[in-house]
Image 1 (cartoon, rainbow, N blue to C red):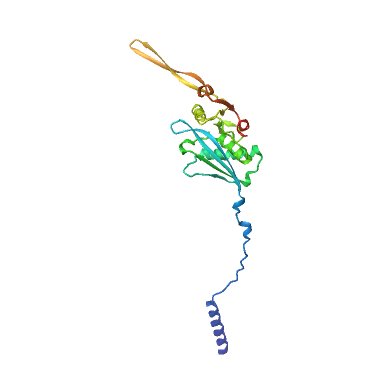
Image 2 (tube, rainbow, N blue to C red):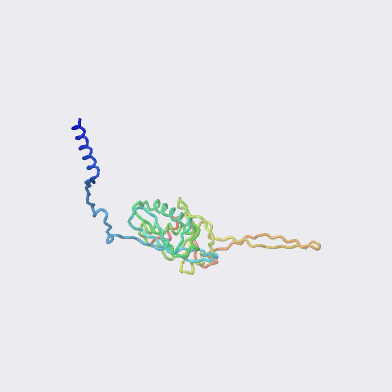
Amino acid sequence: MEQKIAIFVIVLVALLLLAKLPFQTKTEITPLNITKVQIVYENLSYVEKEIKIPALDNKGRGVSTKLKVQAIPGNGRVLINIDNLLFWIDTQNSIQIAKSVAQELTKIDLSSIDLIYTIEANASIIEGPSAGAAITIATIAAVENKSINESVMITGSINPDGSIGQVGGILAKAKASKDVGAKLFLVPKGQGTQVNYVPEEKCEKIGPLTYCTITYKEEFIDISEKVGIKVVEVASIQDALNYFLV
């Protein structure tokens, strides 16, 4: 009996000693294939296109801005350069629609192309969707690597079906386009003529009282004649491309 107890004690002590020893595990490290992750900058190419966009400043005056679109090999991302510039939500939405329309019209798969957008302007003058048509044209020019006719400018929003929507400030934008040398100004369908409502007051005295009524008379302004720049109405991006791409 004493012999069995002695053996049990020896085994127990041995187990306790083993428990205190650090266990080592063998890990096999497979070397990385560096050639698969290396970025070769020497062969990286990109296309950059620039287009002038008429806009309004925070006082409603016409100004001209510049949009640059870069198309580089990538993963289908849309990148926005926000250095010293705040892109409004509706402008971001216009960029997303522009990419979709560009892909549909060109039939080019953009899943392997990154698009980088930069607008050179103060944030207060790019709020609103009116740059959508110009953004779409610049995107198409970039992915197809075609030149843009610098003597043409356009205003108008972009719809998912490629149609161009109406916007405001046409007269002021036409003046801004002419000031930077544009010879042709493209506007949405139906906006080649601006309608102003001029108030007319008529007063009538009845006894000791004077009664006045105000009516508004329509005044039609031909943008082309008023500004001195050729104006053409376009209904879709396909129409606009006939004037823009060289």
